[in-house]
Length: 135
Image (cartoon, rainbow, N blue to C red):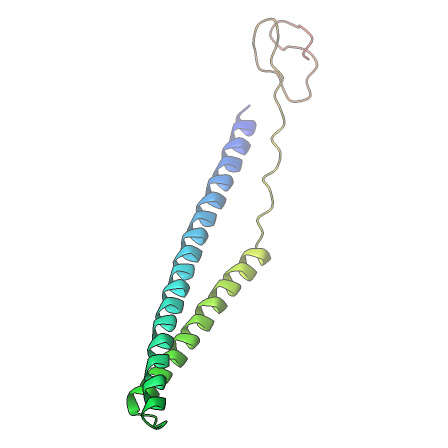
């Protein structure tokens, strides 16, 4: 009986550990996705600013001022950050796929005596206490 309980405890601990690791990975992925979204919003704002500056430059004879070049540099930096974050997500997903945790071993069911309620041994056919046939 002690062996059965020990195996059951080990199985439960493996399950809890697996759930904890999965939760941490989900939180990390959510943080990365939020960072990607924030970077994409910043990029959109910068692109809008770039469009306004470009339009103003076009209205003034197509000169490209320094502030336009600075915004182009910021957009490039946002693109690099988005690519880096997406790469981190891909790496996390690849690591998860490579380290798929096998399902815990099936715990054999323990028959219970219909007469006296005593737990039998897995695979047992008769109750050790009263001798009633186990189902």
